[in-house]
Amino acid sequence: FIPLGVLGALAAVAAVVWLSRRRLSLRGELATAVRRREFHMHYQPIIELDTGICVGAESLVRWTRPDGSHVRPDLFIPLAEEHGLIDALTDQVIERVIDDMRELLVQDRSAHIAINLSAGDVSSGRALKVLAAKLAGTGIHPQQIWLEATERGFIDIQRARNTLAVARRTGHCVAIDDFGVGYSSLQYLQQLPLDALKIDKSFIDAIGTDSATSPVTSHIIDMAKTLGLFTVAEGIETPAQLAYLQARQVEFGQGWLFSRALPPEEFIAFHHQRLQQ
Ligand code: C2E
Ligand code: CA
Ligand code: CA
Ligand code: CA
Image 1 (cartoon, rainbow, N blue to C red):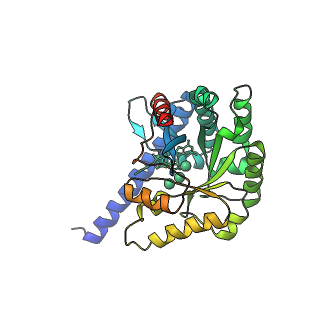
Image 2: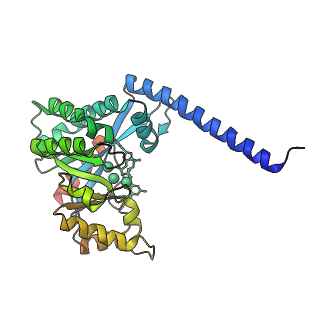
Image 3: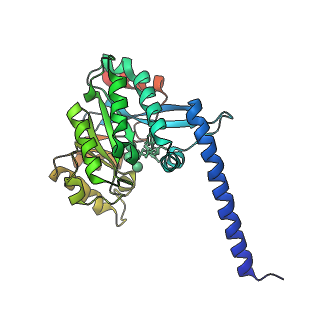
């Protein structure tokens, strides 16, 4: 006879062991995937909210394993960060984005593509050099590449500040990503050289609900305006959310209301259609 509490504890231990073994095997697979370049990009249209025009896209990395299954980026990006694989992964992202979007960006000078940088990329500044080398000779203007820097895991504000300052001097537009979910305080934000603020989906979800979060959404928009930053709302799913954001003069947005993230050719087709409207 084993008491229930002990059984529960054993089950918990088994679950932890199973999870950590799964992570361990995923880590090994991820290292192989980086070597074999098993990544590609999808592009989620970014819309100018008062005109409905597609002004560009956010690039989002996708990992398809050899057996055809997909691993979500919010699972493997943190793993890549933890295990020193993020540099190599970001290099591949940059390479893919420029190869996929070169033609569109040269044809349409008003279009931009956003690239996500993780905390490691922002600290080291290496990604900027890789990007500059990749852009050389393509005819793409640095202004057409926006950078989304996450505030999760920013270790060294001084280094982050340097990297972002270099990015802006180069001509890139710099946005702070997932704003509101991390540690960001007004004071912290004021120390970073930024152009834009991306409002995390959780704050968009709260619009029109009686959740305690919904006044925070309004506050975040005010804060961006006070700091002279423009705003991009992510995860817009309903016309009511869109109407609210338009009324609050949020400049740009993305979300399933407009489009999911699309493979390169589908995004290019979407962009051309949106331009004609
Ligand atoms: P994120 O930067 O906040 O990206 C937005 C996420 O929200 C994307 O998930 C996107 O597909 C999803 N999304 C957009 N609109 C909607 C909507 O209307 N409803 C819902 N439910 N979801 C929506 P995804 O592609 O799974 O990416 C997850 C996270 O992984 C990203 O969050 C970003 O932090 C990270 N990530 C993705 N690609 C890259 C990359 O190339 N480099 C780095 N460093 N991180 C990346
Ligand atoms: Ca992002
Ligand atoms: Ca985001
Ligand atoms: Ca987010």
